[in-house]
Image (cartoon, rainbow, N blue to C red; front, top):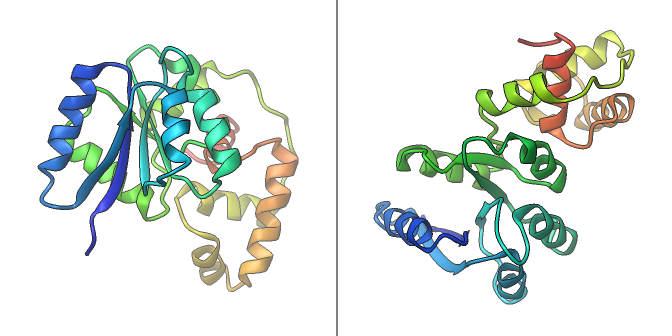
Length: 209
């Protein structure tokens, strides 16, 4: 199997080089295509080389991770970006989710967790830790009190378990198109923009634990 091509974007040289070194020792699973020290340099490089997964620091000079993620995904919607955060940066979590990040990693995560998140995001799975989601639930203002149908609640529960539209359709004996229509209705009713926000909504309103 070909290695997953990565880009590492972080302004702390020691951390970035240490992470790159550990990733290169990953048994051939990963190839670090390039590095960048801020959002602007990242945007310049990504115009010429699209990696499979990007590890993106949130707090950087020149251009931070939120703006860089928004700008990059507007140009290349297929990008898979994982945010790198320090303890105490909870105020950025929702901004990165809204910008389109597919997952989060704390900078003190061990390399096995880093590798696991990279592989999951590469395969289309969103990776948001329970700790991060709890932080959003406890610090975010109240969301809209949407009235969901019984079927929409059922689909929301399966979404929160990480199932794709195809998998939910199989579970409920529905067509994939029907599930996607329900998901679109749920997003509209709850004023959510993506799956991560739906999970927060479901936890906040006690649809799931």
